[in-house]
Image 1 (tube, rainbow, N blue to C red):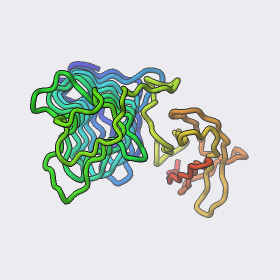
Image 2 (spheres, rainbow, N blue to C red):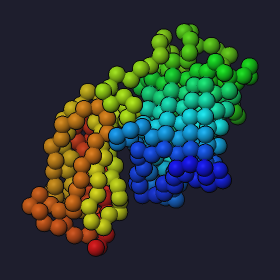
Image 3 (tube, helix red, strand yellow):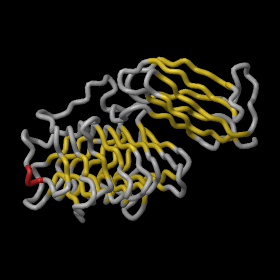
Image 4 (cartoon, rainbow, N blue to C red):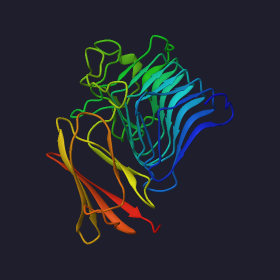
Length: 307
């Protein structure tokens, strides 16, 4: 999709919709993730190839709660990723190159960014504000991001915090590669904790590198939801986990359907056709989807509408 200089290439809105395996170029907004509720959870993932967004004013713009974005290249966009919502979210395995600003995060709930590369920017790698916006890595969950640029101006920052408010917690940016060891202190605003810095660039080791390597930790989502017939269950397991059980319960706690899954690193999908283990249609109602592994226990609400 190309050439929408005053428009949006792909518009993803509400209730766990998904976009994957796409190319967008030359738009004002390459992709917009738009939400209107507290449980939006739109997703951009990779299936066969990485997504590509290039030469846009803003590559990816999100006002949705709890988005999941993995396996995406944002190239030569004025701003690569712009988040502006209060509902968190996960961004992983991104490659953002060129442009003025890699990531602009103006949310009041931190978005998690892991295993991503932000480079070639001329202004700021990450532009955020005190007590908000972005989680680039903590002492116990290193970011494994590569954030640096030889094209940055003399006043540019790898992580810029403005306004900086000393009474709010520092922006966490631990366990990343900053282009040099030790990291260049002048490239960080006050209010950034860039401790535990990597001494070498992070290189994903998964066989799925370049696809969905960026997803960090366990996850459980469905699309569509609410559903009229069936739905796709998307899940990932925690680090080191390879076996898990996926179950669907009705509101009385009765087991409707069960899958025993074995999965390696990355995002996986399976389909539920709206039937129980005996092949009977379960009808309309509220159901609960559970992902249980050795260290994972996630629950997701499903609503099935009348046909």
